[in-house]
Length: 157
Figure 1 (cartoon, rainbow, N blue to C red):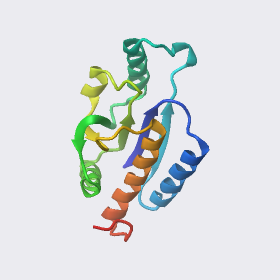
Figure 2 (figure 1 turned 45 degrees about the horizontal axis):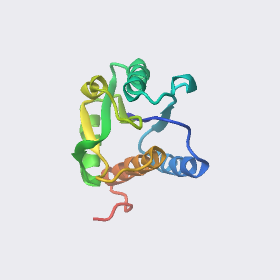
Figure 3 (figure 1 turned 30 degrees about the vertical axis):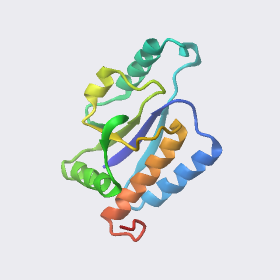
Figure 4 (figure 1 turned 180 degrees about the horizontal axis):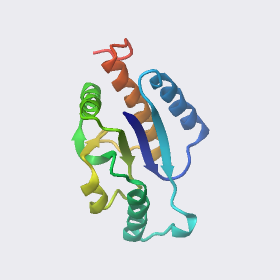
């Protein structure tokens, strides 16, 4: 199963990019994973929240394919621990999912239409994090999940 982390927003700061690459490299022996940054055009930048969310929806839905298994990260989603993340990954692999997409929506969240396309909705924390940091956290959790599934000593109970 291939994993894609989609994130609406700007490109990463170099230190974030370095950390993401670090975890992707560590995950590589077990699974392929990549980051896809969905950048709204500068022309569409607006203070109109509804319009911004609608434009982000169009960008997400244009990229979403039938073989994608969409997992939305949202503060109102289900809180999972690391073992539960790994169990969800294993379930998807057992079900023959080709590509799991973990979506980090825009600053104003996602539309109900995008939410309805998600097979699952997870929350990372009750805290609010900057998007770039969330990308790094997700990269680490994907690595942690596969280390758990492969009995690597990385994760300690």
